[in-house]
Length: 154
Image (cartoon, rainbow, N blue to C red; front, side, top):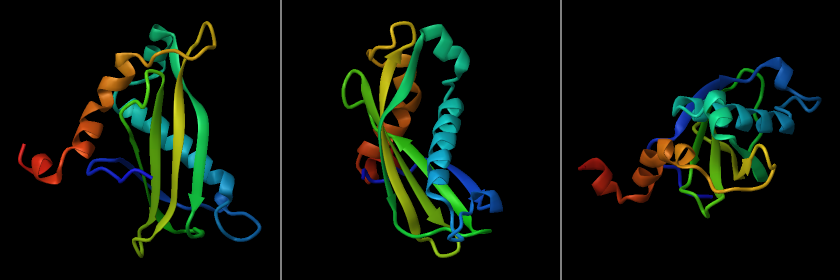
């Protein structure tokens, strides 16, 4: 997994009863819901919303998920959910990374990555990622790729 940048998009979450399964920990499918939620919230935070998607007639769709469960989460636990994106790996693809940390002990409990593919809404075929989906994240991946001393001093 790509190293977390200094400025991931983050949300705080407290595990609720509806997320607990018969083994008394968070159900695996809930992590996928959290991934979808934070990805969309991150997109909205940089101005990528339904109106822009409709105007461009382009949308990012899931090509593949990889999910790694490192430790269980339980009812009432406070979590920090982080996400960040890489620069596009090709004209049509980009990877988004996720990390969940339990607040009480700082333990990384979950990591994941999703390969996102840009799709033309009309043709339902893959297409180049428009600049409007790349540039809003530019600061995140340029900062994550620059050496630490450059990020701190300009």
